[in-house]
Length: 476
Image (cartoon, rainbow, N blue to C red; front, side, top):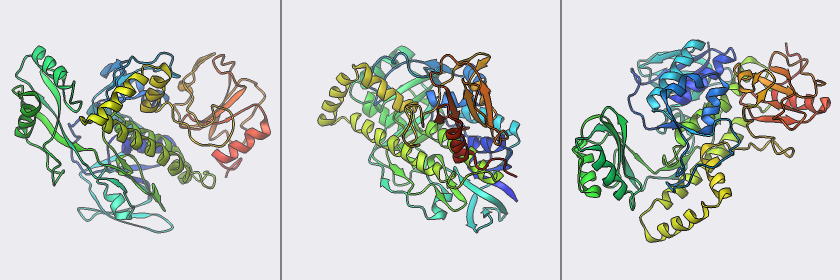
């Protein structure tokens, strides 16, 4: 029997599988497509996702293939300088195409021993107390202890589970694609700048080698959004908004997206869980979609691994929904707000002008950037120190960096006192005694996802939290 089947080989599925494999759990990824997609809807990693890559030793692979940007305007395109002094060692957005992100995560997963099976479409599932049975389109049947559906917004897994997906249908649609432009770059830039004064869902961003990422409002909402638009659709809409089609030709890929906003009612049904777009869809404003999925995976992976390995305390796996459902609900709300602010209606434009004034306040600007980049996320772990529930930024230690100590995907006690102990949990939690001048508390207990589970210096209190997050002492 397979430990965990992951349906969907995009960034979320690959990250889930890698986290499982890091903990010694056998993971098999089933991907419907026979070849990696060339579409790059997502174009970057926000701060928290950059930190995640650093925590697992992957950032060195990403940085040479991306570009670091510290520009404002991530919230509804309202321009403001990047805030200074963000609580992170990675105060930038890493621009990198989604296809590159998927390639690097595929390499990482493969190196860890994840089995990726392409051309495998899941069409049926059933579960019992012992595991999950899945059926593939070719009639193959597989059995696993758990199944994670990371199969996108039209998730087959979610539909087969009968999980409600409440929210709002698309009211507007946007065309997005990569293609060549015959017009000279200076003219393109000038026209785009003029159109964007009133229409923020419009753009043509150079990708290099004469190829542009083109975005333009569609003519209504299509009846069948599974059918990709044509190059003629792009030409017609470009002429409607810009008075020119820029001589677009030779498309690499063409797609459409809407502003539908939906959140799965449940993230878990028995032994089946949902992550990424299978659990939530929203407009791409702020570039949060891919990042939200990667962060879902980072939260879920270690908890599901603990369940499979047999040391998970009661209720640990259920904290995945408790923590991540709330985060997704907040993202859906902020994307709804951004879409309203990007409307061309007079009322929305008035609110936009007012918010643009407020963003001039440093505290407002910082708050919105922390929200978009997910470094403001704090899980509700109860009352306590301000660090409790937050992810810990990278710190300079006496011998190296904090994130260098988290690459094994284990818990970590960072201890400035030298008096504490993780005896009985040494197979799940590392103990590092370090002066850590950047840390202004006696000690912190970090979960494998880097979030703070405890702050203090009392051994008895620490023991209680070790039991809460890492199970019984000296498990068999």
